[in-house]
Amino acid sequence: MLDAVVVGAGPNGLTAAVELARRGFDVAVFEARDTVGGGARTEELTLPGFRHDPCSAAHPLGVNSPAFRALPLERYGLEWLHAELPMAHPFPDGTAAVLARSVAETAASFGPRDAGTYRRLVQPFLPRWDTLARDFMSLPLTALPRDPVTLARFGLVGLPPSTWLMRRFRDERARTLFAGLVAHVMAPLGGFATGAVGLIFALAAHARGWPVARGGSQAISDALAAYLKDLGGALHTDYEVKRLDDLPPARAYVFDTSPTALARIAGLGRYYDGYRYGPGVFKIDYALDGPVPWTAREPRSAGTVQIGADSAEIGTALRAASREGRAPDRPFLITVQPSVADPTRAPAGKQVFWAYGHVPNGWTGDLTDAVERQLERFAPGFRDRVLARATAGPPEVAARNANYVGGDIATGSVSGLQILLRPKPSLFPYSTPHPAVYICSSATPPGPGVHGMSGHNAAKAVWRRLRQA
Image 1: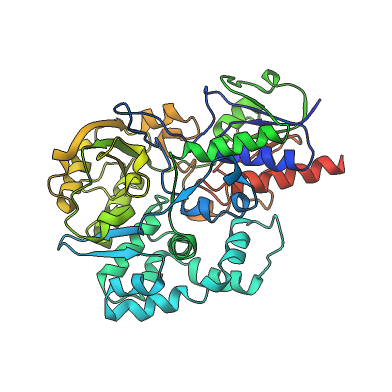
Image 2: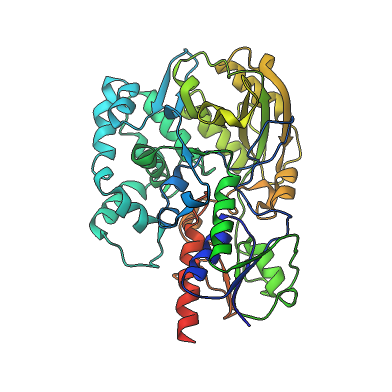
């Protein structure tokens, strides 16, 4: 009998398997698709030689992840590559604010009225970032806080809505960039704990940047899989699990799946019926014949570029997708240009580029024209650079990854109490009513992103139980 079976070979499932195997447990992973990866894959979606990331591409949480940093993934081919700027946010007047590695450079891009405010906001947390990141990403308490005072101070700043925090800024440049940071988790700007979301992304950039993985995000998954095999773990692909009986006998079963799928497979009935899924995304992967022709200088050297004219436009787009059930006329866009840091991703002189906007869950329309009109506002002539595009609305996103129910790449709404207490309000979110079944996907804390911490935290719950048995 195996000690543990993991279902799903995304970053969280692979991390959970690695953590268990490192501690001497006999582990096997079963993945429905023919390759590992989940939300960290790389494929030729457009033209030969153009290597795209169908989902995650830039990894501020990955390079800062306590779980990944504790593993020897560089020995298995993972290399982080950094653009000159982690992120830029252009404005219609041809200027831009930036999220730079340097706090001073970031603050200066906001203008003199907000520079000091921004420095005072982030400076107290940066010297304690590693401890804060571990404490924050281990909530609820899978480990006692190493620095409870800093964590409490962070909570006082971050738990209120981001709109409260943004009132500290006097000018729109800082408010707009911060609103864009919050929008990465598709949360309405006025939601509970959204200030923490923006702060985490900003602090991550200052600490270690927003890099891409050399060769594509698949390198993260491949490194985890290779390490698992060296630890003696087994990996089975092309193996769809429809019920627990499809799996070999084991002392524990760990699911890197949506709560919906887990309930169906494990026979948990209506246990997760109260779990909410959030907006979907409409994503376009581009093969370009050269760099994006940004009007502003700063986005040309940034790995990630946020697109939204001001905080009001960003808020309107989020409300349309999450509350009004319609696609926004001017979608807020998150764009990543991996070729700025990694020229191997496309043929010489060419580039890969992706952009996505938020749409209602399960939306079946075509947002291509709206996305490209937004890009043309800040990069006139963009369409002339397009060699090929691959579009994916919510149905296609969900078909690529079953965890993304209705196109929700966060595997569950990141709003209300569900931003912290997911998939159920519980101090033991990785456990289920079945004593041998656990969940480790992005539907559990600390939530979405390629960081492996949900898998790491779930593995802790599993190995504690196995050692007690």
